[in-house]
Image (cartoon, rainbow, N blue to C red):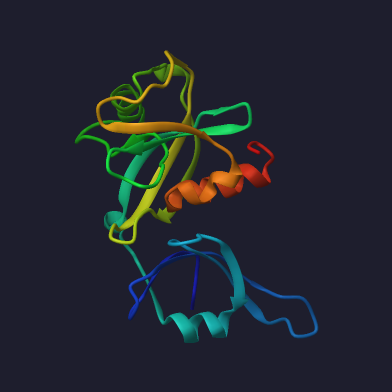
Length: 194
């Protein structure tokens, strides 16, 4: 039986997140799956359970070891979201990165924001915004993105590892990697970015 979780297509290797399984309206009362493709457009879809099982032949990933685990900062100003682009890369991403061994989420957030943006995050002000899953690049494993909002001192500025920072609106969605597009979808529909 399909249940919420992360699934991988056996033949294609593509990753999907099942968000919910439920019964549709009468008279058919067919079972449907609500899922999100964790690559390319990352849009949420609803299809009959039978079609999901038939087309995808999924198996449940029972280990989070598959994830690229990243801590990131959300900054929204004037209805735009702050993103960064690394040198030699095409797409923007949420500022942040992988934790060093033994680091807490907040320690990682403070260090990464200092290294990438030259800002000093106030650890006491940081609070969890949400956790997201998405393919960031076709050749990378599925990303687990833990997002925080926090107060900080300084002006975000590209550092030695960052080519460019940008304040993006929803019209810029395709400039972001998969996890950034997923977050921008949510922020746009919540009315937080233009």
